[in-house]
Length: 193
Image (cartoon, rainbow, N blue to C red):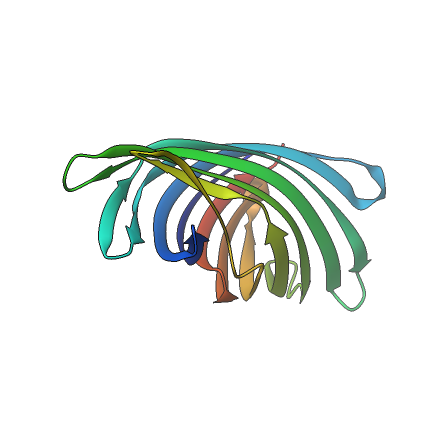
């Protein structure tokens, strides 16, 4: 079981127009670990707020919701060298209302399917820094007065790094930074039982 809070900054193309997206989200997740290094999970989140800047017009974003399912596999877990290699796939959908300063209301939606790779090491069985790469895609859209307008994410990737600190009683603190491509910062707290 885990909880996370994230800040995301990216740009989209909606009807060939650049849209700067900023969003804040909080989420709760459950994950089940199985034999062979596999795990499956689900997440429910709240898009707490943010903004869409479309051709100079600011749209306030949220509050809204998000759900996702994911699976992961640890392909390498070298106890002696303290190295790991893991992949994760996920599918998510996000929906949130929008409103302009002129009180025009709309809806923002995104579907995201992703594949991620993390390579790192564990130091003293406590600290696990890693490098990550993620490829993703899926449609985005927003509604305006005339109806839905389709779009897409031009950055179908992100590269970054992160760190997990394992505390007593199976508690983990995490920080993940996507630095290139779609950018974001996520802090998380998890507990296993």
